[in-house]
Image 1 (cartoon, rainbow, N blue to C red):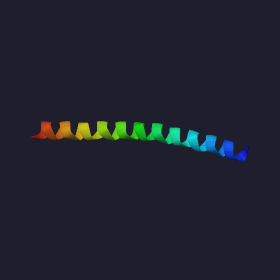
Image 2 (cartoon, one colour):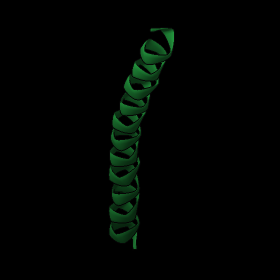
Image 3 (cartoon, rainbow, N blue to C red):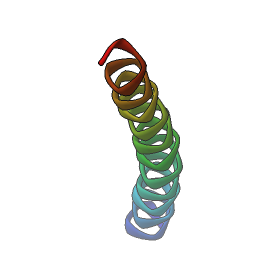
Image 4 (cartoon, rainbow, N blue to C red):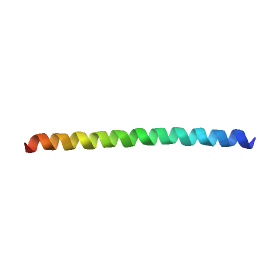
Length: 43
């Protein structure tokens, strides 16, 4: 019983981490795209 609950918690934590990482990657990608656009405008 404890093992099953723990495995469920690990799965939930893993899914949450994947979603969080996806959001972070999206934010970082947008950030670098903005930097790239700013560099193009300044030149």
